[in-house]
Length: 262
Image 1 (cartoon, one colour):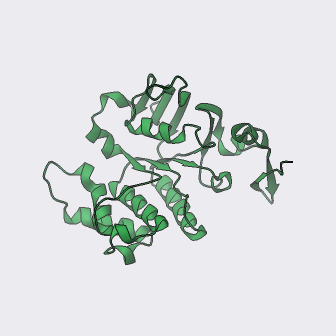
Image 2 (cartoon, rainbow, N blue to C red):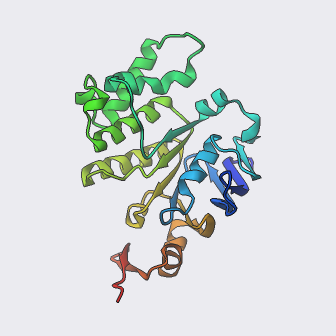
């Protein structure tokens, strides 16, 4: 582990109770402040489980995770929440919170017991909504939003949390092209401000120009890992997804295409 690592994972292995085959098997990675890591792989590859282990929700059977030089297992839940934020793929909202109230919850890790949000907390909430173009929705009920709108609000809550490491599970799913572009732009700005980001996706084309590193997973194991341009190859992607995939260079931009299968 380097002193410059914000996150370091070595030999992570996790299996759910009653299952013999691990969902995450021997995964190692390193991430510095401001670095963006994209995790790609088919359904069932272990991507979401990996994020939950990095957040401390799941306890691995073996392997070690360090966060800012300290083992994750030695940190309290509140300590982790002040450093690591999660944007889940699905978020169930049971109560009729307004969008602004929901995003304000992102400030909870920074508040003491029974402490009320300050004006600064409310300002950060409004700034997070503005950053994602959501100010017009601030007084709307969360229950009235479309799936894409709700996903954007979940991201706004994570931005209000001001985490130094942001974990994003399929943040581009269910979004139109304009909102995908907005989220990718936010990831770039977070990286430039020193925030490290780990995000999962099924869209290799969306990774380029955003991710510094890529981790390819299949059946819980690492297929390839390294700099984006070195990992996103026809061979590595074909092994990861189990289908013929071709990466084409078009004027310096790599395009990923699924080969026709007979």
